[in-house]
Length: 593
Image 1 (cartoon, helix red, strand yellow):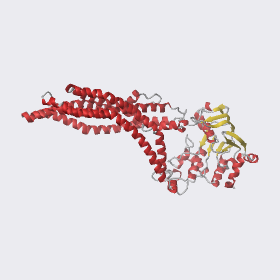
Image 2 (cartoon, helix red, strand yellow):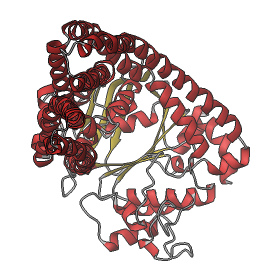
Image 3 (cartoon, rainbow, N blue to C red):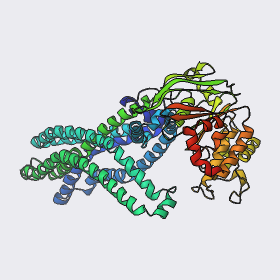
Image 4 (cartoon, rainbow, N blue to C red):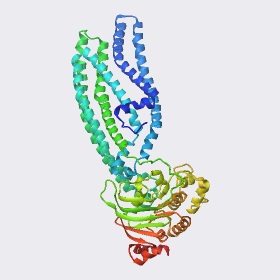
């Protein structure tokens, strides 16, 4: 599936032929047979009834009704046997479609620039588009063929009605125009409602996670907030329900008003066509068959065709949003592995760098200047919102749209290839991911080009992770996560040590650790830093922390406030200056004495 081109409606229609040609042709054949059977069944029904009356009334041979009887039996077998079989084929086709289309769609999403994942508007778009995208794209051809079948059946019924009852047939055709127009309007309104309620859905989903999620289960039980959260969830759910109900009620009122009129006309037809039967200009069989065709036409025009028109409109609106998803910018070389061996790091310089997150007005970095040199240890400290984590996002190229210059080895950071950046920098963020794989696989994530068992063992040991713990029955091969049968969950501190091992195993020349020991007690934190200091000789490290144990070991401490460096120096120099750093350290002194 080529996602480099715009997904036009013709392209969407052709998808099933390219992905599942056999099942698509089978479904098309089904629709053609259904279209052919409908008008023929009306005529066969009329012939059967008239013939049966002649057999009973005039004593004609019963053999004359065998042919129409068999034909009607075949129609019934088709309706009650073939349709379920085709449903099974549709299910298999859908599964094959998902298998073939899911991979390129996932790869596209994985390549999106990081800024799209921190933007509410884009996240809402992704939530709407990502709700079974391959299913929504692949059914468009089915919607079209089903619509054409129903349209063909309705047209064939209309022709029969026009030939037998011209006034009734003409009224049906005239009333169909406003019904279809209202269906199109309803489809647009329905999809707009889906857009409007996305934010509501996000809120309801978040509150629902508080109620049923595994992670908050402990606090849910301890603080007993489940009842209150349930009330908030029900209130939010009710808000979404009423919103959708208003849209559906409006569509129902608009699109079904004409259907009611058609139903009344169909009832009147019972009396309008009766005189024709009485004077012999219309047979009883044709009268009964026409009534069946009439009510089938009313059903199609009042329900089926408006439904398909609404689906058409909804699908076209979905295509617009899907193309917005395709237009989202991708990170260059997002899937590329780091280059090997890692390049030599010399110096990183921030020169008058300013940065504001897309879609916001608050300036996070304000003409920031600082220098990182090879082989030294640095610490960034400061209050929340000072810009510490933002600096790491710029260094690792998660964001490129900054003002000023960031020079890596004297060359603008944006001019370096992404595989080089991946090889040169390793970042362990505070909100690291807890992967439900084995202990070893969790640690090995830090070395994308592949880690040996010896490297994994060393990293786990240096991080202080105990692979011989009683809970780890298979050692480093123990599967983590309670969602797995036999999986083991770790404490917060154990998870943090395991994540720390990823930074240790990485061959990157610069290691960035953003609040790496937040879940550890001060004693364990000091032990981790002592071990890490012993193995980080000759490499460059950047620590970001509110807890200042790491800062004491740094060669240079940058104190940030308002997106700028307001103090810099080593621990002793900053303590002597009695500034922000000294005040922060004194407030934490009791933790480390």
